Image: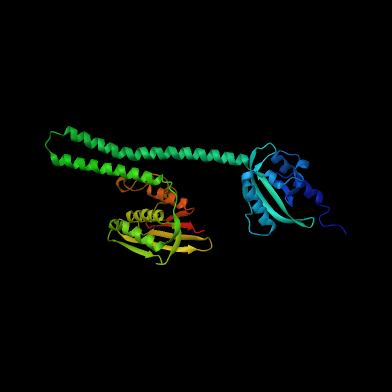
Length: 354
């Protein structure tokens, strides 16, 4: 009886041999089959790689990772379906590899069927692109710093110049008002500098299990005097709500989001804070929402950019949401904003709990 697919075997062999993907079979840690592309990636001839230990093609710093994934695949344990690691060529050059592994039966024994793509050039291009983006961001950031500091400095200079010109005028009240303006502008400059320090903070997070209700309570107390009487607080956080996070940093996130909400409700409204666990994603999420004027659609993509603000200069530095975004990223989490003009805004923060 003719074996299944025997007529098509030459076609399949041709597909494997001419594949743009490196394909190999690892049996008992030895390469028992490899196509030409696999050999080419590492600078060998096909007959050279047969019989070699598969870890010889893996960078020493990544061998433990690759070996562990192969072991899990062989034992039918959960393992990443696709991952990146570094490889090592015949002449010792490092290459970046995208890998996929599957458990198969080869000659009646469990083996690993692997396929891989050389992504070295892609990684280099991506790194160059990231570097270009960083430089562009740095230029934007520097321009923002210069602009934000230049405004109060110009105001201080103008006020002092008028005071000097009017020094002998005898109008002490007028000069006093100008000096008060100078004092306000100095305070504004100090607030910008403080915000820059907060923005550039890289201190390590002290993540531990905390009572989130306490974090919210303390955050509210901190800004209580800045919440007008016409704004109603609606806190929907269970008193026994526990989460893994940095108490101090998440309190800062809450303060920033609450102050934004307060400033969006000039005519009063409701400030809502809620929290819940997402077991499917192993995340703890909380929301800060308001019933204010909302955020225009075109602004939603920019609100986390440094110095981007729709507020009057005296009402913010444009760094609050950037700082918030940075803290959430440090936790390995995400922050999303949803809003429509006239319908308020909701900021959702989700932090991993592993």
